[in-house]
Image 1 (cartoon, rainbow, N blue to C red):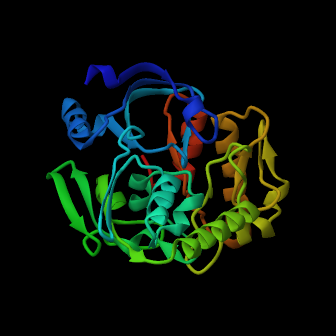
Image 2 (cartoon, rainbow, N blue to C red; image 1 turned 135 degrees about the vertical axis):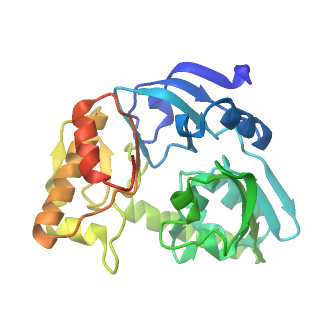
Length: 305
């Protein structure tokens, strides 16, 4: 496994925010067996697992621990209308692969920069489709039980969440049951989805991390933020995107402290106006910067340690 280990790894180029310092150790397993091997090398609480770092803010001051990136776990297998994808397969790649086979159900993934593992974990959804619609089962790693296979029902999917988040389960592989459909109709739907995303979300040429806050029950984080003037907010080298108030873009070599400070401004304004505490949708990896830690204690509260 040593050939898949990088030390003092510069993570900045791999994050969609284009922000982040050095990570002490980064493992790049290529399959489930290698990932399992890494997880057994160290205590579970010493390792954090990430996919495509498309919803993760990494501290500009780096991280002193070890992480696993599943980017090299990108195998796809097809059997009839069933498709099995490794955790590191990028959403657009899987969407295009099954579309080419005339299989429908994953058209919404075409605009997601994330990977299958993270999308299953958070029950990703868009344009009227969700991961949970077509997922049959997922192979996961449990700190207590090792490798387990969970059915869709056992994964307890809900809006932007699943059992994986509650029990620190790591998704290794996912199996989907798709529906046959003419390729031209699938491609047309994917084009519509991309056009919708282009109109409502910043392109990755403007470094960003997707939606910053989860929608509170029965409301929209974007609406709440727009109503308190978030689109005019900025901090350091980052700003709220002018077309949607729930996105932060790194427009001028921003740092992780800039992002967290802007998130705090947004969070505080909504709390003051509506007494609603917005919950971050993006993950944060850091710990070396005291000011960042103080902000995170408020923003993440019990949702992230």
